[in-house]
Amino acid sequence: NLEARHVTINQLKAQDVTLNKGSVRLRFYPKGAASREDPLDITIRDPVIVGIFRKHKAGKIRKEKIFEDMNGKKIKLYMDRVYPEGFEGEEGFSAHDLRAVFVTEHVAAMIAAIGPRSQPKTQAEFDKRMKLIFTTVGNLIGDKPDVTRNSYTVPEVYEKWAADLGFDARPKKDRKEPA
Image 1 (spheres, rainbow, N blue to C red):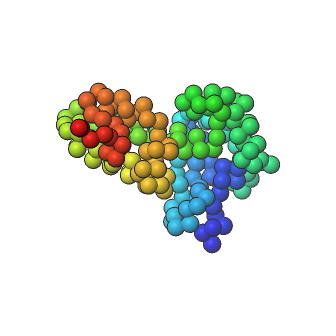
Image 2: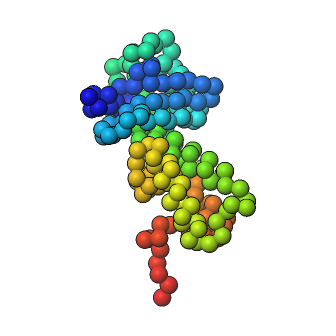
Image 3: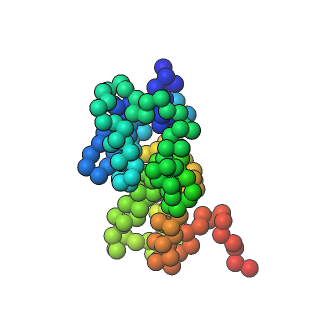
């Protein structure tokens, strides 16, 4: 039963979490992804978040929950306490922010991987590259490119790239037509 394997962050088990030096890898079936054959695979490098998972996974065996006796509300209260500035300076921290950290890291890495000779030369090329980036990262989290861009990516990551190249980072539909 596909629905039975869906988990939220408070249901993560030790088997879903791999700790590496400087990162934590989460592999699970997110809520609302009934058609996914493969689990969502997220690696997070934020030292505060890695520390939280390291502390809570310590001594746990395969099927034990990482966050014992927790629910989303309790996790948020805990994260707000240890990470009061939230993600990117927003007040508070939510489970949604874990996905945003992952997406933003991947978008930034894809932009950084574009060599000087491969940079887009026109606004149209830039728009195509943006679509490819958000489609690729969206596929990693099981979301559409627009949702990936608008809900999970810190805009400064791609806005700086656009500004450096002299392009408009806004989606085409949000740009004003010249008079």
